Image 1: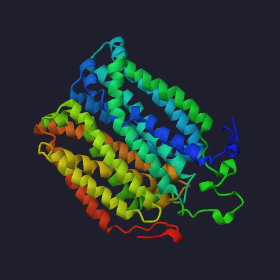
Image 2: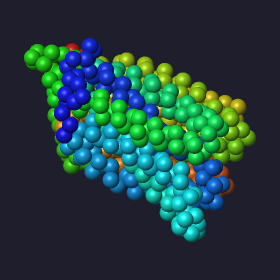
Image 3: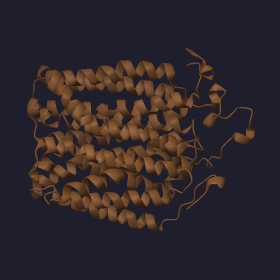
Image 4: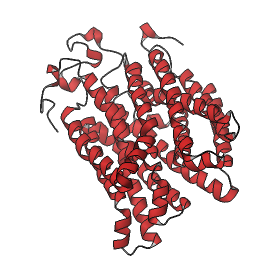
Length: 435
């Protein structure tokens, strides 16, 4: 293990070191973009053209690679519990950067190996496995978890402030990547992203991140180590097996997974979905900006009050907003469809940030957080794989994206009804309990 005093002692920081960890937690989310759907979606049409694959073949490679990656995320969560965020974030960033470079060379590697469709498909599948596992899976989960251990009483607010930056970064990512492609070409854009995350961020993360305040002789929220009265309350820690037996775990995991499925499908096929309703690619990519505004506003409002309230109302609002967004997508060709989609998915995405940040540490405690959140991540990553393929199959067999969107709407309504009736018990600080 790397000493916490290398290359400097965090106790000498002029500010509470949790804020330094906050900065790198935020950066970890942003540098995971090459492994997120919005990071790959901009390249979808390029992959189809350069690799001579159909849209369904690219979607299936994405599906299989992502599903395969999801099978290992619970194990990666246990690695987090064992090795800590410092090593895991730096290591996953380096591996993500390497896999992005591999994606940039899939066409070259395919020609070296004969250039058949099967070879190209397998190479792309393997590359998708790497970026999804290390990006959306490991780097994202570890970046979320490492911050939760540094703040308790202000956990929701601090996570919410991070989510504002992350939501905005994710929203402008397609436009930023499109700019990189126009400036350097698709291969140059991938090289730039791969080297930035795999070299620059990985090294900085190893230098600055620390696993938790106790290991540094500090206390969460900036309290003094010898002030026992300042120690905040935590939920009793539960193992992954105990979490799996809880209906609360499943309603949160399935709801977060539904957001991943629907949101990933829309992002992956955004150009084609909007074209089906008569919109240009520019308008399709431009949709992310108003959605980000609504997401940021709702996230900031919710984060400012969630530390004083129970989490159930936030889950209900998230599912309700996503259901409204689904109505907008189904009616995208209508004059009001675009804005209903932007508002619904924007607000739903903002609340998703609050719920995903807090659910598992609030209900299942910090001791096995990596394993519990890793299992949830495997569900969400699996769902994010199913989404693009389901929408592609809907187009192939039904001629439209609407059927898949309608199924998603029904699933969201069912989850909303289940969330209403499932009882939830969580630790809320007595002095701040409400709702």
